Length: 348
Image (cartoon, rainbow, N blue to C red; front, side, top):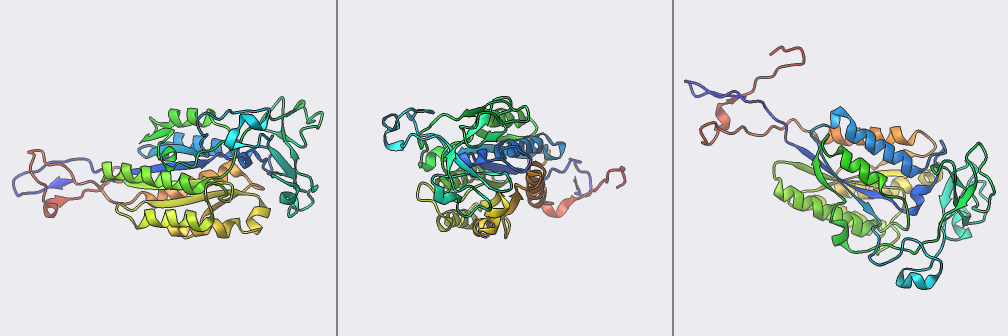
């Protein structure tokens, strides 16, 4: 930009207004479900986020991260009896059922398996394959996974361990910071977490909006948005679609306005049974997109998730530039600022 006053000026590089993305990442037990490739949803989505934050095109974007559910303090990670869980019981192993597409879906009772095509109507304990824990086995009593994946090892029982406190979700696991510098912290954070427990979406999204609002107030020239990435319907801590949509709408309507984008990771059966429609309500209320981005687990989950992240990035990077600072410390007159555009070939 060149400021003209008839006798001279300063030449400074124009800088786009920064974009900051705060990701609220679902790590509920259903993220352990396998996709059509045999990889778990969790591992496929982790690979997508890792690729995005290390992509040179993401350089300059601020990204922060938190997960839901967050474990309640003092509750053990694993258990052998209900008394160890206290109010966070019962002590049960993760359970699932498998449909005709060989996709495992998390369940609590046999009734959760009824709607799945070709599924044995039994909700049974899950296991992981000893030689490659990216693969689940069902039921856990299966002696061997086959295909060189080793023995089927039963997963440890755990309490229903999750907090409903909004303040817990408003405290990031990884603070918003600029890429690529923050990419290592995000990758390490993803490595440190594994799926478990339920889907307390309402307090999780409220915490994300609260943190994003605080960040936006402290960084008024930044565009700050929230991404809700989930594979399940809200079902804990007074969570349901209307309640979560209201959180998104309130954030969007506030000052500063915080937009909420939504990415859902679902099987074709989940999509048919209303997952798209339900998440669309949250996305529309949050002002990010009129519809949620839906990742189909029968396709390439990692690439679909990357594509959704890239679309969000592209839609939120605007052609707005920060006003340059006057070299003499005075106020810049917008009417005396000229824009000089230079393309990739050096042509002005």
